[in-house]
Image (cartoon, rainbow, N blue to C red; front, side):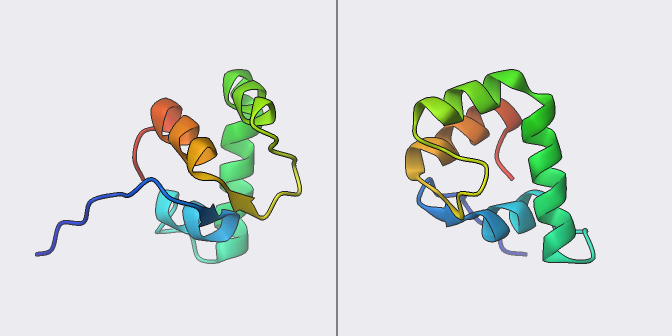
Amino acid sequence: MYETTFRIRPYSKRELASLYFPETPTVDSAVSNLRLWMKRNGEVLERLRETGYRTHSKIFTPRQVRILVEIFGEP
């Protein structure tokens, strides 16, 4: 078996959502799940907005990915 190490780098919202929700049948469902996680956690949204994140952003910057990993853990 291969063990992969998660890297902090820019990720598209779809790519990161797929990593957090690999068992979700569609990428769109995975994105919806990630959005729901973020919406339910006020600290995440507040910290992301401080970095320039907007709801319709397609890409997470490395700084934004780091915030998500700090709060949700590695995917």
